[in-house]
Amino acid sequence: MENILEKIQKELVENINNFKKMILSDTSSDIKKIVVRPILIKNKIMLQIERYRGSKVFHENIELNAIFDLPFSEYNQILIETIGKDIIFSKQKAGYKKKVRENAISQSDINLSHNKQKSYLINEGDNVPAMVDLGIFTKDGKIVKSKYDKFKQINRFIEIIDDVFKSINKDEITILDFGCGKSYLTFLVYYYFVEIKKMKAKIIGYDLKSDVVDRCNEIAKNYGYSGLHFQVNDVKKDKLYNGAIDVIISLHACDTATDFALDYAIKHKIPYIFSVPCCQHEINQTIKKGGDFDLLLNDGLIKERFSALLTDAIRVEILRAKGYDVDVIEFVDFAHSPKNIMLRANLTHKTGSLENIDTLMKKYNFSQKLYELNKK
Image 1 (tube, rainbow, N blue to C red):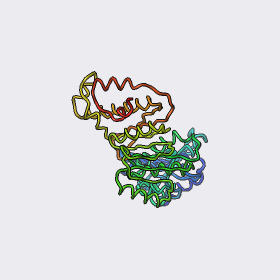
Image 2 (cartoon, rainbow, N blue to C red; image 1 turned 120 degrees about the horizontal axis):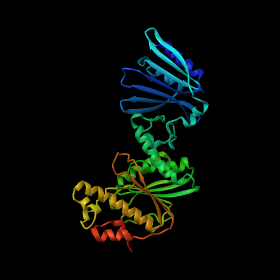
Image 3 (cartoon, helix red, strand yellow; image 1 turned 180 degrees about the vertical axis):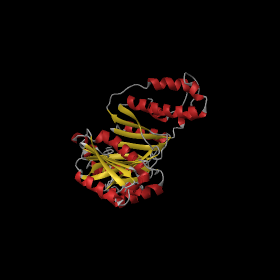
C-alpha cells in the first residue's frame, strides 16, 4: 500500500497546479465513492472531500497532507483528473497499474476560487465564538461533520441579511431583536455587522425570561461584544427603545408577538424588517365558514395550515399597504421546523389599501392582531 501512496503523492506534487479532482471508486466499503477536489480557503489551497454513502453525501475540508489518510487500499480504481490527461490506477493482483489517457480539461476548468462547494460569509477557520458554543465549529475552527447542515443553514440566514446590506455603506446600525431567546442568532447578526461589514453595531435583544436575558448578557460580555445588550421586556406592552432604529428582527416570536413586532416597525417607520413568524393560532381559533375557502376549514390539520398561511399573507398585505416592499422567502429553520417562511421588508413609502383584508374579515369573521392594530 505504501507504493500506491507514493505514486499518488508523486502525481499530486507534479500536477498540483493542473489538478481538477480525484475519484476513488469500485469498492465493497459502505462509502461507495470518495471525490477529492482542490479548493482555495483564505488564499490557502486545501482539499474538499465528498464521501458518498447511499443517497447521502458528506463533506469535509482537509489539509493537503491529510489526503494520505484516505483508505486507498479499499478502492479498486483511483482516477486523477488533470489538465489534458487522466491518470488512472487500477488494482491488480500484483498491485496498482497506472494508465494515462488524454482528456479535454483546460485551464479554465481549474479555477480554484470557483471550485469550492460554496463561498460562505462565515467560513471554516473564522473566529466566531458563537459557532463554537453551538457545537458547529471545534475550538480550532473546524466544522463538526455532523453539524454541516446547521453550518449551511446559519450561513443562509446571514446571506438573507447580506442580500440587503452588502451594498449599503453605513458607519453605524441599531437593531432591535424581538423575542431573541438563546438561539445565538443575535450573536451571529452582531458578528456579521461588526466583523464582516466593519460597522459599529448596537443590538438590543428583548425576551420575557430573566434567566435567558442574564445568560445572554454574560455571553456577550465573554465574547467582547460591547454593542450587544439584552433586556427583559414584553413587546406587547412594555416601553421599548425610543432612539433611531434601522432594523427589526423577529425570529419565531410566538403567535401575536410577531404582530406587535411588525406593528412597532410600522409605527416607528423602521427601514428594515426580518421576521420569521411562529405559532399562528389566532385565525385558526376564530375563523368561521362564510365563503369560497370553506373547503379548507373542514379538517383540523388543513385548517391549521391554511390559517397559518392566511396569517402571513395578511401580514404581508398590511406591510405593503403601510409602505413596505416585502419579499416572502423560504427560510430553513435551525430546528428543522415546517415554520420556514421569512418576511423580509424594506420601507419605500409606496402605500396601498387594506380592502382585500376587509373583505375577508367580513366573510370569515376572524381575528388578526396586526390588522386590528392598523385597520384605521
